[in-house]
Image (tube, rainbow, N blue to C red):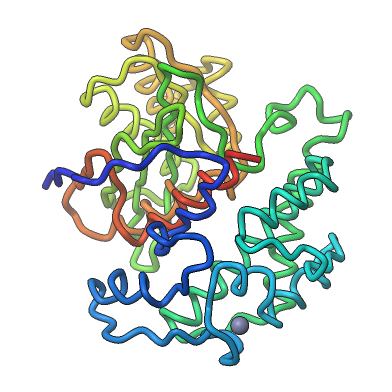
Length: 331
Ligand SMILES: [Zn+2]
C-alpha cells in the first residue's frame, strides 16, 4: 500500500514552536481548544475541553502547558536546570524561549531544556490520549538520563569513538542532501517493525515508511534491516544524496569502516554499502535515541505485514515527533 500525502509543511522559522502539533494552526495567545476541536474531532474524540488536562485549573495554552502549569513548573524545578520559568513572561511560547536563549548559551543546558520540554509534552499526551499519569520524577529522570548519556559520550577519552560526535537531537542535512533516519522496534509476539523517514534541509518530510518482519531475533540485525529498508525506499523514490542515520552505533561504525564480516549482520551491511555506492553520495551518521524518535515511532507502527510508504508526510501519530525535531532544529 502506498499513500499519497497532500500535506506539505510550511516554511520553518524561529517561531516554529507555534506549529507544535496538534496546534500548528494556532496563533499566538489563542486558546488551544479552538484548534484542538478540529484536530481531535478528526480523531473521533468529540468535544475538546478548553481546560488544561493536567491541572484542571486554567485554560490550556502552549505557554500554560509548558511553563505555567503547576506540574510543568515542578518538572523544571526538579530538573538539573533548576529552572524557575516564572520570570519569563512573554506572551507566547516562542517569545519565552527566545528570552531564555539570551540568558543561557551552553549547549548542554539546551540539551537538557529540550529533553524536559519533550518530557512535558509526552507526559501530557500520555494522560490525554491514554489515561496514563506518568510520575514527575520518572519524567525528570528520563530527561536527565538522555542528556547524561549524551554528556558521557563527549568525554575526551572516547574521542576515537563515533559516539563522541553523535548529536543528542536531530540535525537537518545540508541543502540538497536528504537525511534518512532508520530504526527498529521489537514486539512481544516476536515480530520486529522497521521504520524510516527521509527529510530535507528544512526538516520537511520527503517520505516515511514502516514494515513488519519476522524470523529475526537479533536487534543489531533488525537495525541493519531497517537501514537497508530505509535506504532502498529512498533510492526508489529518487533520492541520491543521502545521510543515513541510526542510533545503532555498531551499525554506523560497520558502515563507516566498510567492514563486511561473514555474518547475517555483515551481509546486510554489504547490501547497504552496495546501495550506498549507487548513490551520488551517502554518508553514515550516528544519533542519540532522542534524535531518532521519528524513525523509532514509525517502526512501532510496523505491525501490519504490508509495506507502507507515505509520501511527503508521516502518519498523524508520528507528527508530534517531527514537530519536536523542527523546534529543536532552531536552537
Ligand atoms: Zn495546567
